[in-house]
Image (tube, rainbow, N blue to C red; front, side, top):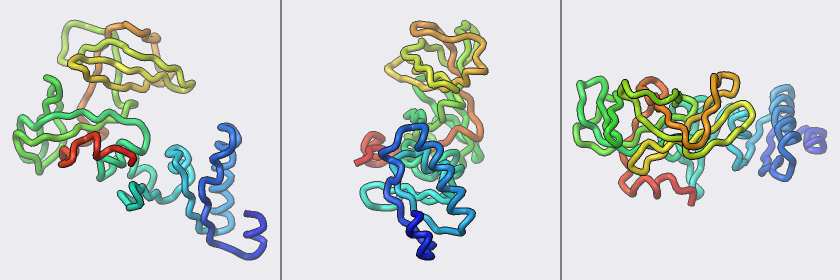
Amino acid sequence: MGRAIATGSHFFLLDEPLGALDALVRAELRYELRRLASDLGLTVIHVTHDQEEALSIADRVVVMKRGAVVEVGSPAELYYSPKNIFTENFVGETNLLEGSVVGTNGTDCAVEVKGQRIRIPASAKKVGQRVVVAVRPEFVPLVPAKAEGDEWRGRIKEVAFLGSISRYVVEVGNGLDIIAHIPTIAERREFQVGDDVNVQLRSGEHTLLFDYPEEGLEKETALE
């Protein structure tokens, strides 16, 4: 890049430039690359399979599948409000829950997923329609199990400590697993494998609703 900059180049194509580096150096250099491009007014197309790298570097992200563009948007748009179910699944981790619409009032609808009802803003859905509810793990609170309430009752299946967060896989019955990310500093107690918990899956701006894919959910979200 130094040689290219010295010749007066302002357009760069970087094909996985940080792929062979260790994690610490890779993290440092991605911010340095962003600063360099901003300070020198460079236009950079940065190709990467690392979603975190793409989100941290880019002003605009292009998600591709099988050589075709799936969706284009800012990092925040593609993470929080993607228009495509492939993008929701590919950019970051998410929970995709298959369900069906059981009620609608014109502004939102009630979706049933494994016996649990979730109300989600949606105006164009019909009763009986198959849908997919998507919610990021950081928006899935866990609390110690209690008998009362209409929350999902589940059992901790897997635990992974990731530094700033703990990643939990909760089995809520009928073969359905839900992933939850809990900030380490926010944990009043650390759940263990086998603990019974309640999953507080709430409706809101961070709960998205997609039409069920014609070719099936597994094929729609497959990388190849």
